[in-house]
Image 1 (cartoon, rainbow, N blue to C red):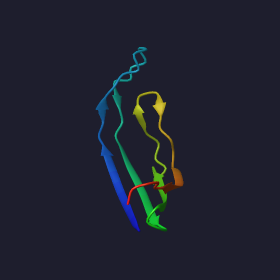
Image 2: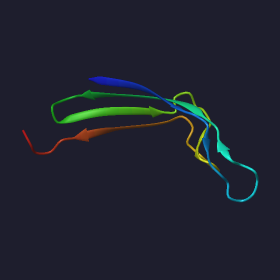
Image 3: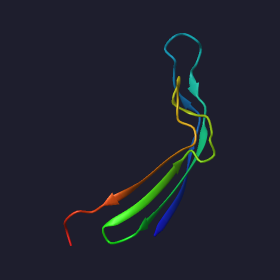
Image 4: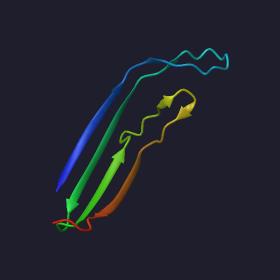
Length: 82
C-alpha cells in the first residue's frame, strides 16, 4: 500500500498568442495532485490518481486550458516473472 501527494508551482512565464491580441505571458499556477495504490496480491495492484485536486484553472500553453479536477483509477496485472 502506498500514497503520494505532490504540488507543482509554476511561475509567470513568457508566451504569446501569435495573433496580435497582446498576450505576452502565461500566468502562474499551483497544482496539487494525489494518488494511492494497494497491492491486493503480488500480481494485482489497484490504483487511483487525482490531478488538479484544487480544481484550479490554468493553461500550460496560452489558449489551451488544462483539465479541471480529474481522476483515473484502474488495476495493474503482472504476468510472468517471479
